[in-house]
Image 1 (cartoon, rainbow, N blue to C red):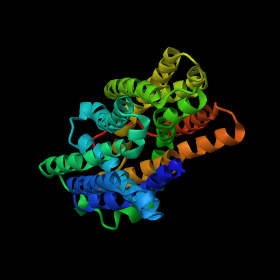
Image 2: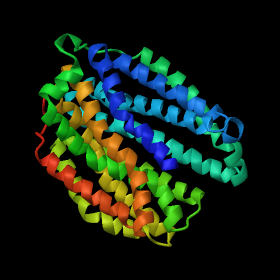
Image 3: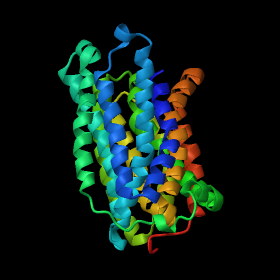
Length: 367
């Protein structure tokens, strides 16, 4: 049920990509980023102060789901618009590294969530954590949102491409750029499924399969995400030197070959073996994550770039990524096969590998 509510927020991402992508293409990237951070900060804070079921009954889960919907709309436009803004304003020979920085900033957010969860698990008793401690991180959402809002209001805006859009950018995307949309979605598939299985769902998987306490599983996940950030940045920088496709194809092949052995390593009683196996996933997933942002941004025409990138990315992440923990949990329950996550990753690795082969190299392109 918890993963179901998690999925609902993700299913709203394509709509968020359309709405905020439209603002980014027709008004400005800066305006789109300002809207997206406000739409994230407010519902996050509201979750922190929301009364529970004992107080307001069925309204509690309904309001929680509504907040998740608004968060999903926000992220649907936030992440791709952030990447586009950063890459468009960066030097040509550093677009891969800068794109990796944008992608890493999202991982830092996940890392902070994982780290705060681990810290609260150590400081508070399970009873206090369940009663009120879980609200603490959500309350900080308002502070972070306000800081981000004022930072973005002062950010420099580059050339507005709105004048080049003769029709609605969403209409133009579906009318003239469907093949590009499909390619971007196909390339995104590997990251969408692998990231949310290995660095989100895996915490529950470790508790379920290896009987590891939540505090320990969060600790393992936190360390692996630090490695993930370092590999992402390194892969982005490498893609500036040798191209996006060699990095992406190598990472997809490695994911295809090593996913089953690595998850089998996490199906172990030794904390060290589990940690090393998840770090192995961080190497292959991080390499793909480092080169992918620049390829997506460089592949799209400037005047509809926010819309087409947001839609291509969010169609995959919103559907596959959001449903991944729910589907994995359901399949493991029905089949009693704890290796299901590895099979899911292998399947999408094949899709992204084939798609990447048909995408043009972009690292020397003038955008």
